[in-house]
Image (cartoon, rainbow, N blue to C red; front, side):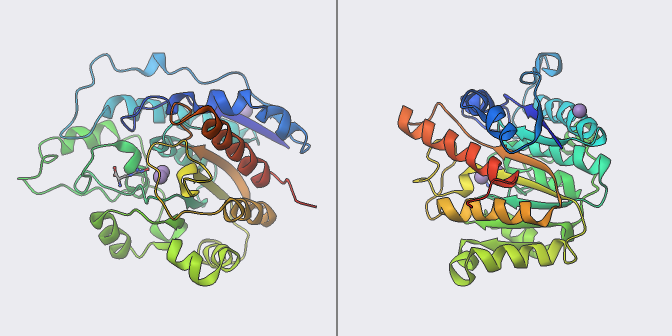
Length: 315
Ligand code: DIR
Ligand code: MN
Ligand code: MN
Ligand code: MN
């Protein structure tokens, strides 16, 4: 049993600096030692350096920001995560912003073509080239993984850039299918994203369903949807902003009304219990936001979620 930590100090998928220091803070808080206590071997050779993939000239494509940088970083992350998976390790990717999941999930798919994705987030991150309002690629990774980017109409701001953007992201094999991803924790979904979720029949458990059924039943229903026999590999992509901002304040796009401390942990514990977890992402910790107390609280909860997904139990 080996966890391979992939530290990704990267912020190019969104406008706020600081999220690139998330992985450094998580490791400095003692994450490696904490995972070792759970009887995993831990492989960590320092944080990823993306200098070699930095595009010299990276003007927006339409309204997409840092499009070449995000693409190249994610492509590099995909190769690293894919290699760890092939080595038989469990890749644990520390973000960094959530655009990185294009890389991590592509990497998982290269080893496990039938991987199931559980996406825990306040946001659906499924905007397309045609639907994005912000042009921030951390709001878009799922659309590339699903291969649902259609050409926008000619009057659209991204219309003229469509071919260039699709060429830049052509390395992302659209291998994920809409029945193999499930969301938990949503509460800030753009109108265009709601349409996409409906159009593709993508299962999502928002905070409304969590209030209605409780987190226990929601996780069970989510697993029943993507993994009814509990025999398929699972990639858990956890955006720390799924948690309520009172629990995880230091993140770039906090949204009120989120998961409680226990609800977040329960998700990780229940996924561990399936025995199907093959890859884990912990994303969007931004240690430059709010005071030192908020930062250490957010970093600590990030470490704690990771430990639970890797088998820490209460008893
Ligand atoms: C919004 C916000 N849907 C966008 N997305 C965020 O920019 O596409 N994702 N914050 O994490
Ligand atoms: Mn390895
Ligand atoms: Mn996200
Ligand atoms: Mn989010």
